[in-house]
Length: 478
Image 1 (cartoon, rainbow, N blue to C red):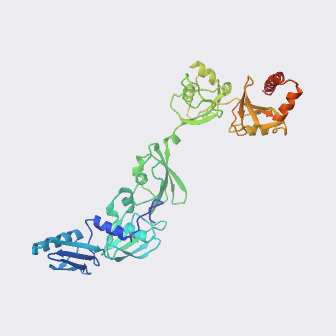
Image 2 (image 1 turned 90 degrees about the horizontal axis):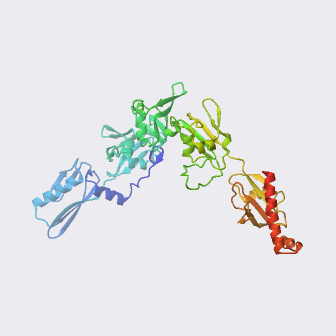
Image 3 (image 1 turned 45 degrees about the vertical axis):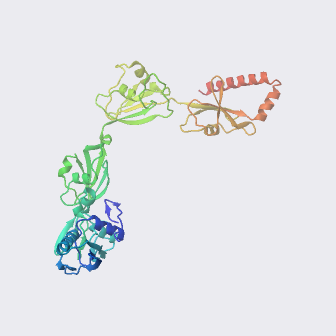
């Protein structure tokens, strides 16, 4: 298939009779061609229908009018002429002149196409459709400098303008004897980044870097117009880098093999890296905010005179998980690590504690080392480091697994400081500070109750002892 850039473009099969008929009916400039089949219909007392075929000399033998030379005429012109002359010559009830079938003729297409040779077409077929018949362009075949040879004259057709700009004159209708030559493209250049249609395109000699951008659909809204980079191969087969503004691109001609990159202005802006235990969004101060257990990592554009407090305000300030006293501003320019207590700064809003930021600074607010406690019928109860995206079964495995025949995987609970339980499953997600308790099996619970003799008093005492023992364990591990 023919292609624009590197993308194939499908087109309707040209041998469809329905499509050919629709084209003929839809055009006012169907040029009469030797081999056309017509019929004339005249009704006086009876209806007379006469088939006609246009010969190679463009002479047409028309009933009631004789021989007419129609060379250079369009079908609509001839139809009006015939109807007008017959009505002027005789009284008729009805007269019409109809194109039954367009002529078929051969053209020759060669050069950079997949299937060069002779193709049979009609006068309503175009240059584009001839290339479809030839199975499309070969790699490197030119679609912008196609030579159409006709009657000793050569027309240079640019299908890039036909597709990209809607210039219908570049997609010429075919005529008998046409020869189509597809040369090798002189200039192929690639464009990536913030344009509408990044791809590899053909350009013609004299076109500029700005033309390449226009062919690719133009710049996106966030394109950096001041830093457009071009990689170009030199005559010594080495590469050189050209840095252009969009305005300068109008004056720099494209060379074969050029590779352009249009970056986003965010990529080329001076940035501030913000990382750590911050909310990630501004807070109103009146509504509770969800605390994310994961540190945020965000690049923000640097603005002159930007301060650390302004960055904290943009991201809601430190969360309760922030190890605020160990916060740093890491200065890329000097490598200096500037300590700062972000919670004290956040709460006081003091100018004396604030820091004026520089481009490429790294604002780092570390998180406290959070843990998860696992207790109950596990082999090695204890407190374990919190790991993001972990589930209950992960921590039970850290605790050596459930004790066989004693612990019950269907009786796992989240305990709070008052001993209240909420059910968990092995697949439940875990948050920092969770206290996971694996309860005993029903049989173990029954044996325990019998051993204690009394049910009510024994269970209450056991529950209280359980909670106290778990929080004694937490104190030990923390």
